[in-house]
Length: 115
Image (cartoon, rainbow, N blue to C red; front, side, top):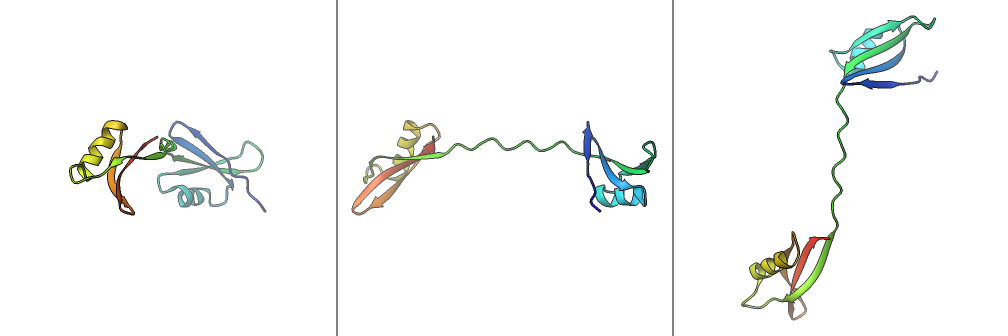
């Protein structure tokens, strides 16, 4: 036998249909915790168990993250290495950070920043 589960929310009070009334309060407390209350509704001819419990609103999804862009700006030198590269990237790109990266014999200032 399959059971149709229907959960309704009204404010912070949720209602969950748990099938027949056999062990209604026990089924309710097992599924939704000790503060929940099971009650039988006999108005539809068959006694059906309804569980009332405190529910929390759904957590909103996190804001979308912006993709990261990369660019090579200038060469890194003894006069302008990691700190200088980082500062230059921050000036060029909002939220940008830079590091010196060796590619072969060349040290390039690589920037990462939100696109």
